[in-house]
Each structure stands twice: as C-alpha cells, then as structure tokens.
Amino acid sequence: MAKKSSIEKNNRRKRMVKNAAPKRERLKAIIADKTLPMEERFAATLKLAEMPRNSSATRVRLRCELSGRPRSNYRKNKLSRIALRELGSKGMVPGLVKSSW
Image (cartoon, rainbow, N blue to C red; front, side, top):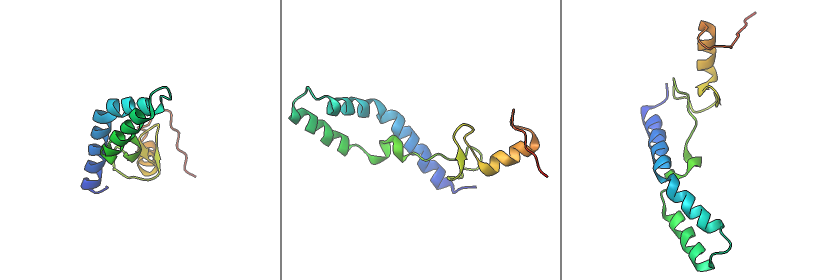
C-alpha cells in the first residue's frame, strides 16, 4: 500500500486539474491564435505561467485503484500488475485467463 499522503496529493492534483481545465484551455487558445496581437498573446502566456503547476494535467500520476502503487499500471484496468495478477488468480477479471505451469 502506498503512503496515504502520496495518494491524497495525487487526488488533490486531479481536483485542481478538473477545476482549472476551462481557464487553461482559454489561455492556450489565445496563445495559439496567430491573428491576435503579440502583446495579448504574451499577457496570456504570463497568466498561464502564474497558474499553479499542479493544475496541469501532466502532473497527475497514474496510480493503482486498489493499492495506490505508482508504477507498472495498466491504463485500461487502472490496476497495477500485482493487483491485476491477484484478481486474475481469483477469477474476478472478466476475459482474463491466467495460466500457471
């Protein structure tokens, strides 16, 4: 099991990303629009830089839903390889055939 603080920090980042997503999209659209004046685009760049870093989607870490393990996760299942193996052995993952020989 991962540290509770690490899991909570990641959850806080997810909430920040969700709340700040519309504002970030607007600023990025202004920055990418080449028809606008350079001063306006530069001001949007500065506003984007002032936003909290944790509101960026790239700061969110993919963690296992069961154990909170940060590495070797499957995106489709949102589980780590260890948790997926345990659930597969118990027959709890539909469509997963686990063989041991």
